[in-house]
Length: 375
Image 1 (cartoon, one colour):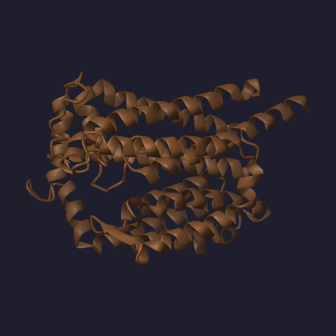
Image 2: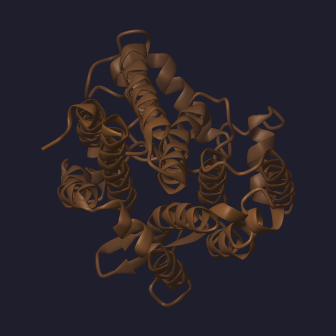
Image 3: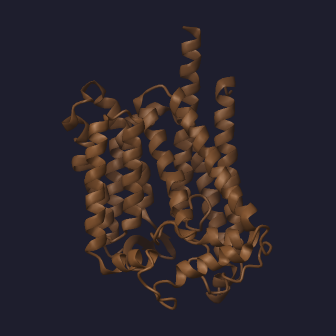
């Protein structure tokens, strides 16, 4: 039985999450229909795959939500170790390269992205370490070791070895978010941010492909038929939708004009088919999710809870606005999907389990607030 104090938070988390997933299924059906048909999977091939992943992910979210917070604390190191091992599988014969990034494994007809599981393992691990080292926090060496050195450097490094800088940036952001909401000192946060900025600059400058994408975004190229193709057609799709959209299912861009129409650029299809109204609905749902999680952070029992919820907030909502920023042309193309909406089974399942962890913490926060009230 939910306590009155937890009712609104838990119900809001479930409601917003299921609305995003349901909306995502509708848009995956629309945006993937043509590419699925051309791949001899029928018009519903991509949609049914996403439905299967949602059917798997939602029960896993419920299981994660039912777990006590002590469970996540107790097994944080195990999750982190398993996440690293899974990510290393991409460098075995199971690993496959897609669009130049080696960040996937393939088992028969199933393709999975281990870095999505590593994101969740990493944020839970950071929270557990912060909780354990709480008496030592305030000293920079204890705030950096082992969270940054060697923990996060190992986790980000094994993903970067597969050349997936977009995923690495999201992982770095969630670590920073967990540290920020976990109460790390401003001095340590500043040093961490500076080091991360220098590292990103190095990896961008040292890669001709990444530099080309950055120059394209800055207007340094005019290669409409090449590197500018996706970004340009994404903007055209948004512009074509106007205020009310051309109607659900009536996108022109999805007819092989826009690469990754059901994944990285699904927001462009939303804007084209449902217009500004549909696009703003997505933005509002993520803003509501942000408000709910921020409120939960203020009511959480301990440093672990605040760090984990903060890290997951930065991961899911931050990645959402990075994706939207790429589609609307504010950011260069990074290759990250729209959480809970884009096609992609591993990403959907990982996000749903992450929300389950947040709900688990929300239940504990309600108990904590009740204990305070009784005291």
